[in-house]
Length: 396
Image 1 (cartoon, one colour):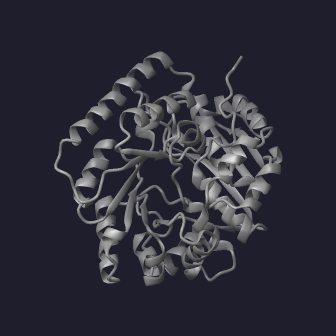
Image 2 (cartoon, rainbow, N blue to C red):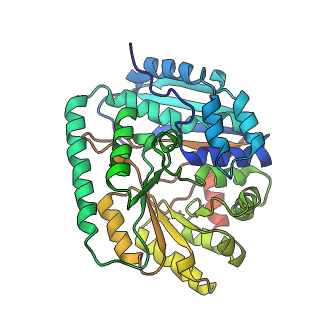
């Protein structure tokens, strides 16, 4: 019997729950559309996965949160009781997600009330990725993966002999959406938790965090800030509106803000003394990380905020080696964290898929991200993109 990819609704990234709760409380009427993209060329057409994908989606929409899962979520101090009550009766609606073949490609659209469709993303990406890699030789891949995992652990053990810096090195797993398989992901995280507890501090995968006794990690993603582009506030003010809503929702918890929805410079223009004091730190997800980190530290200095009281979190295409390089550069100047994804959960010798499921419209209006990295800007409405660039003084 074919093994199902997703068997628990806890197996998603923590920030899906935190954004979900915020939107349920503040903008539950919002309608949204999310679309799937593959940014690179797969080894075979993804359209071949369509039948299996639809069976997996049918199964996903049959799942509900179990009592023990709700009990775990309710134990997180920032999750509120009415959100747990909502999750208790929640089920994904199959009518809100459609998958079809478009030539060799997969076209997948989730559309409906945002609080009913925003959760599809991580499950969908994990399903596509696992179905894709099931067609490769698993035994060889796992042998390669275990060798490479041991090499990463050896890197960390060698690093442990370096002279200590002011702030510790800490990293966590962000690899759920593009993992090789669920079983491999669990093996990697369990191994790191057992062998590298000094450095490995948690995972975004809520199910694995619960099962392995780890800290669930995550705050917000691009979709949260992008949604505010269509919520009736002045477009120039959408970042400030999103940050203010977050502060009011979490009141000191989950205090790491994402900076690259319209670029770092535009973010810092809105990240004034009020927000800089209220948020614990910033997360990098596009552009040169050293350039970004220096900009962040200069901004804190300009506001006369002690950078040692703040944290910079890096999460863009990291490896252990790159994380250690960034640590050596910044560790005497501020607190740090490193979210490492695909190079932990899918470093098994096969070329990975660069797949995403992104918010494209909210309340019938286009939304967009103006990334600091070429190729990450995603919006098919050139008129809105031009307007967004003009409002935030971003060149085309």
